[in-house]
Amino acid sequence: MQTLPERSSPLIFVAEDDAHIRELIVTRLVIAGYRTATAKDGAEAIRGIRESRPSAIILDINMPKASGFDVLSHLRTSRDLSSIPVLVLTARGAPEDVREALRLGARDYLTKPFDDRSFLMRISRLLRPPRVKTMADTDDVELL
Image 1 (cartoon, rainbow, N blue to C red):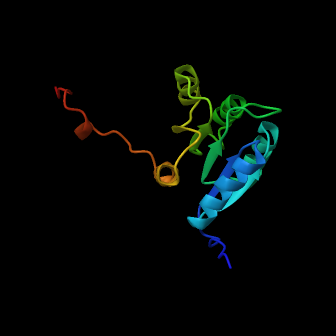
Image 2: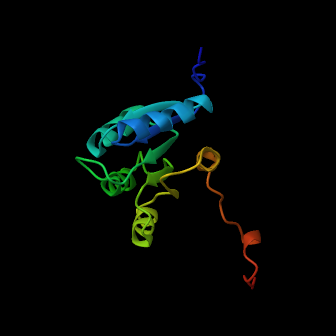
């Protein structure tokens, strides 16, 4: 019998149009202790993210109704959703796709197929707050 994650576990939103891949991702996340919510297309993803307010998002690029790029654009222009970290998980590995996803606000990018260990490590890293750069982080700053 599979134990469901605690209600206090982070909620990960999975937007993936391929039902088999979506199920595989959800299974891996649940086994790792995360709660999940899902969408099978971009328009459903935007609605679901707005309703569920997840801790993080896993987002495919090639989806019907609205692409992952469209979803990223929407998230970044919505003040209440823009801080949710996004991992793009897609078969598209061209450098211009990676650059575009990062430009639109994705925090990480992983191509399919992927291995479990790397995937779960990236999810864990995605859930950590972004590190704020301090004066101590810069070697070449001159103080006047």
